[in-house]
Image (cartoon, rainbow, N blue to C red; front, side, top):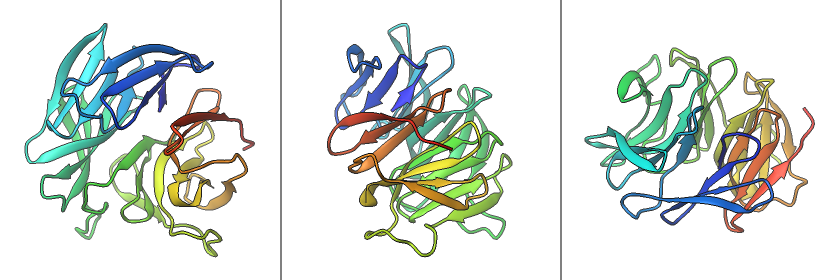
Amino acid sequence: VVCLNEEEIWTSGWNPDIKCFNTQGILQKTIKTKSGVWPGDIAVYSDGALVYSDSSTRTVYKVKNDQTEEIIRLQGWRPFNLYVTSSGDLLVTMFSDDKTQCKVVRYSGSTVKQTIQFDDDGQPLYSGNANSKYITENRNLDICVADCGAGAVVVVNQAGKLRFRYTAHSPFTKKEPFYPFGITTDSQGHILTSDLNNHCIHFLDVDGHFLRYIDNCDLECPSGLYLDNSDNLFVCEFLRGNVKKIRYSK
């Protein structure tokens, strides 16, 4: 789920349709993926252009004024999750064809500006698999990735240096292993990540310290998260096929 403004909510799921709803839940527009395969992820530029990833064709497409163009085509790698940064760059998480490596690549248009893959010791920052790795940028320009395959939120600074990993606070009071899925940040720099298997959202400070759970909203399998400019939290419920709007206190 991603919001261009407080009136338009774009969603995608396990079918080729990318749908735009208003805040009353009324369908405004539908875009179909070019390949007919469900999109890995979607994002929206500030000018309203939509981008979506297609792992089956190793391609990222941009849709504007009902015209679809290919902006990124990879070799040996498959794009998955997307995020448009405050500067207008596109962050793309991608995995290798053999599903053993993962990296984050920053693009300006179709040009690679930065690749984030290893820590200072040469160890992979992210788990090597085809699991989703939702990504966002914090107000301090940290890049935050929900690595569900590793059970961790991995945060690097703007230069790509590891700042911290959050692997669920201790003592962990939920029943199932921590499974971070969606991720977003608010105007104060708090990090929110949805814990799909424990039906809650972890609320962290800018340095990765656990503050509290958001778990009193009848959430079931929360997945995609998005915060608008007024800090309204939009939560996708994976199995119900719902989007909930939540107001929370900071």
